[in-house]
Image (cartoon, rainbow over all chains, first blue to last red; front, side, top):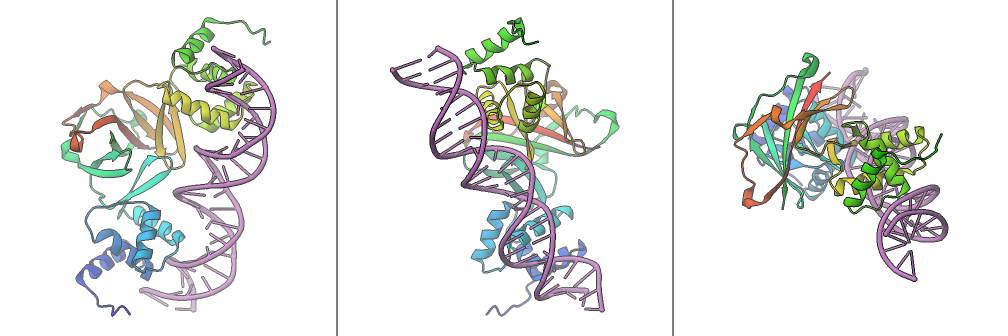
Length: 140
Length: 140
DNA sequence: ATTTGTGCAAATCGTTTGCATCTGA
DNA sequence: TCAGATGCAAACGATTTGCACAAAT
């Protein structure tokens, strides 16, 4: 099975892992391909795990978590906390905000330019701002 | 102590529960008193539970969770999700945002007037905005 | 009397960990 | 070779639930 040809997309993903200092293992490559080959995505660990299974990618849930966290650490992903029960990982690591649809549990990106934030108070004690999260919660 | 006199503060809390349609039970009254008698607070269920114990208020953890959720439903509290592992309950239910100090895990209110948000995109499909959360994460 | 709330312990859910076994460089 | 990854199952921590009992209206 799987006459495994190396597509350009594969190369991109491979490069991406390599240049992040992450070993491009079979599992990480497969997950990265799922994550980064379809535009911006917001996935949960569980969802990615299932998607992997559907694509006959053999990974354990623990490995999915490991990969997601590794990718996040290397800024290939951004983690978003909507509520205490789920964590989303966003393939869009640029500056942007989110709509959150409460009933469907879906997230949608809002480009940073679409919201003007002014007068941002400086952090007390002059500490550094790690990031600004904006979530617009929608009753749908 | 415990000569249980009815202070005006108690009355306020009692009124508050009543007018929210919540039965002012011993436990809810005690918890509400802890929550609403010391200015704006950000508590976790666990923290409030311990505080109750310290004050010899006899409640179970399940009841603390119940009360916090009941209060939140009646808009006496606002729930804030910082990361997947903790939920904070904020006694300030007015319009405002938050600083989050990553190492200490502390929250600090930012009055709404201190941040100007412009061009807020309307919700797709004209759905209603439930609320806008802004969290400024601080490396401290 | 009826409805609503409470306590407890067990159950659940997402996530993490320990450790023996693999695998990429 | 061998540091770094993986898989599995067990451990975890926060939160929820089921149900018998207690309290508020």
